[in-house]
Length: 489
Image 1 (cartoon, one colour):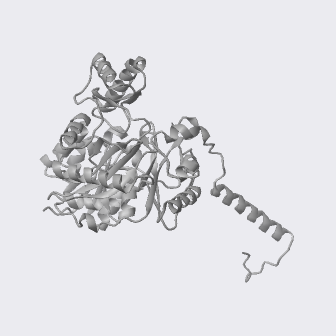
Image 2 (cartoon, rainbow, N blue to C red):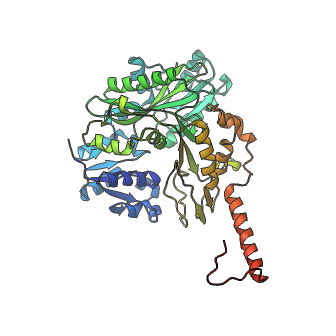
Image 3 (cartoon, rainbow, N blue to C red):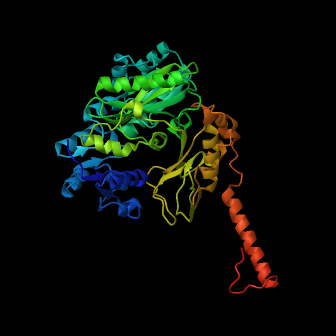
């Protein structure tokens, strides 16, 4: 067992701030690296130490040789990659080990296995996990791909074999479209992952996307923290995540959890991770992928279980055993996470940027905000558009939806457009309120969302202006005597 006393955080933004907070509570020193674009990042001074990494602001965070060198020079025991590219790099994890540093995450061979979607599909199928019909080996030849697609039967989906996040993914409904879609998928895969291999599988139309959060130590102990419903997506990118899933029955819920826990035990997995599935209309279960890192949506699982996933991740990397058995984990209420992005939903979700001119955040019971945004912050244009995550919780579904409405109405970011108006529409939609949604939800409903209604923030500002005008009239007309001992309420 190795006691971790100092961690370098190889990431930026809200996830860097999240890891700093976890380290402080564990009485572990934190170190951050930051690019030229992140000099004013609020997380930078929050760490115990910070070091600039010069050069291209995006490539700087990917230069793991420099990051490892900084970790060694600053006497760190371990590196936490957060989420993103380095968290999914088996090469980086191995380089950490080769340099005497603890990689806070799974073993390199598990990252490599699950980073290869076909290899992971074969491995999971071998131990009895249900998978979608499709290829088990890479496809690079278009003619071969078209033959396979025809055998499977349309619609099919083409997926980047070594990618994720919806990149390199195309749905093909008709044979005549296969050629163009194949080129589009392989070109995008090459652009984002420097690999053009794809695999082809049967496409399940409008399924639910359900994932199981697992936590595993190095001693064969594995527990789950319930499921998250990630069905509300745009272009295969998650927009809203919910736990527990409102329409999932208990039998299917248990089956998903059992499959995930048993699979991780069989494969000897270690650290936190997420096993992801598609469910069709008949609740048939199909494994799609395993994410070997902390997920963006991990807060909802923390809220309903009380388990700090980041802290457990650090402790497991240091050799600790799990603190609890499955029966000791209690699930309480509902939680919803809204990804807050700098984009314009009314203009095909085009990315936006600018300086935060006015910033009013929601609060109160059952409201959590994971973000690094602040008033006056100039948003860099070179990174992902996610500004943070608004998470709300309540004891029942109706309560959590009402909480979401109130919190989203309180949230106000001025200076550039965000997707907050879209979230306000969703939480007032009848299907959402009834818990009826699948991966086609946004495509079906976007045309109905007007995103024009005033928020309560606008109403509050109007009231403030009205009160100021009233006070001015009172003073000008001497309607009351304003003495030193008199306060006008």
